[in-house]
Image 1 (cartoon, rainbow, N blue to C red):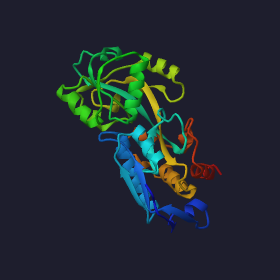
Image 2 (spheres, rainbow, N blue to C red):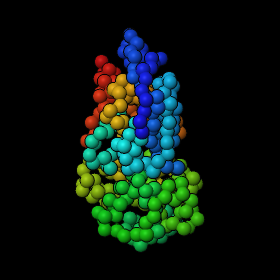
Image 3 (cartoon, rainbow, N blue to C red):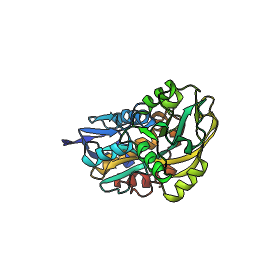
Image 4 (spheres, rainbow, N blue to C red):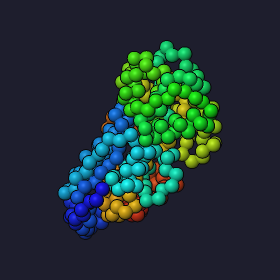
Length: 299
């Protein structure tokens, strides 16, 4: 979208320069692409947008719901969004996008009813499953898994919250959700759910696609009545258009890493956002504004 731009004197500029105020050319509007109903992206993105609205007076900051990672990348590259959340794995060519920083990890969660006969990943063959919304990171990674392990199922596309309700009423056999933990869609099942262990698949998958996938364990206390789950994790990044002002991205970066407690309230996994791991953005280069801020805190 075409955005008019204007020069705003940020009330927080002293924090950026240490002693003098700096005039920052900020857009009249910033659009942050988040995620679908029932996903951590949606809630963390909304909280981040609220924090940014305070740090960028005069700029309208809007968090928009999306299918998540793949759609968010499309919105970012088209200019319909200036900021977006995305898991690392669908970002094969950074092109016009840059990283503000690494945030937290998403975990592949394969949820089935407690009494389901499904015990392992291969048992999903021929079953009715959700691969998340069209355009989501769950869909991207789920389809990649299905191809790699040569597994065929009756897969559908829907928001995690919708899939959760359908698992509960028995119209779906399983749902895949690549998202932070705990995710509301699975929490809402209130203990009437199991997570499928995929330890061998996680190692094979990470070996086949080195970089974005990390074998990991979801702790037992994450969901009521659900045992520890062996799966894999994927880093999540906050992204910005390369063309977005470095001054603005510096403010965004500072807000993310100094307002963390507020942004991630209620999401234990997201609380791992910190400066030390923030620069670990894999194949996606940091935006110049993010580089400036990270260097300033190392002085």
